[in-house]
Length: 144
Image: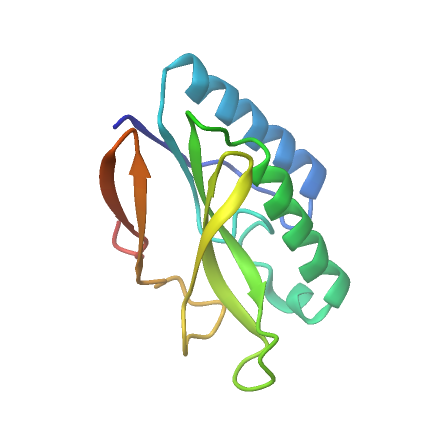
């Protein structure tokens, strides 16, 4: 499996410009026959979003951004991306620091960091990815 880590210089809240940069990174990855592109923690918002997370419209744009990024994936190229997810359960924190696996143009899996404040950079957990019959476990943690 060929993996590209896209460490981009995101601007907080610049959704269109950030998506343009991510689209270019995905295009470059395709040219290099990459199977999986990994974007950073909170790539959908820019890091750190801080008090902008108190604005429902900002969180909503972040979720729209996630869908836009998912559409960049296809059956040959998966994307792993950090985002802010809402907690609609009515219990616990309102927002999660999360990571999504995108494949075939859609979000196919999500991992939410339970019990962490959103601004911390220690999202721990794993998503299992199957690409071309190969199972891979991706772990997202501050030490990687």
